Figure 1 (cartoon, rainbow, N blue to C red):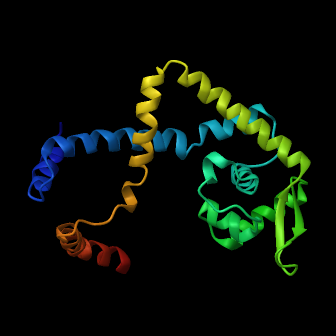
Figure 2: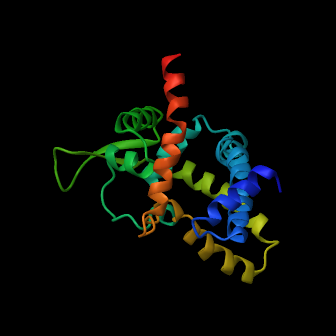
Length: 204
């Protein structure tokens, strides 16, 4: 353990966070950062799918196509209904104008079709075309062939333990602040501690 990590552990202990727990958080963060750099930013699996299947679209377009296709394992908690450009923006967490550009390109490539809403004839909706459906099905099969092959080395008990814990952990950034307000107070102190650095960079 580095001296900087030890200093962090000691500082967090003053806020009631035990050193062993902070060390676990450090270890977990290290795993996540390495995973982010390798798999999330580089999108290795997505790139492999595009390359090995010979797809004529980029990853952003693939994401938009999948969002319109709306797989239940990713968007099952979303109320069912018609898909619009706004739906795509919401599902991907992107600006509506970007979602509009992506869906327009998918329409141009024949992977998505525009339709008329049954609920409001003034509203345009999006549907995956037959070719788009074939493409998403191929990509998802590729993905789960790869992931399923990897998980074959896990026991059923390991998978059963891992999945609910990962789901629980995925919500950590949305957890409410502590009722005592000590975290908010410390964040304010940290902001003040670096305010002069930010000011110097802004003026340079």
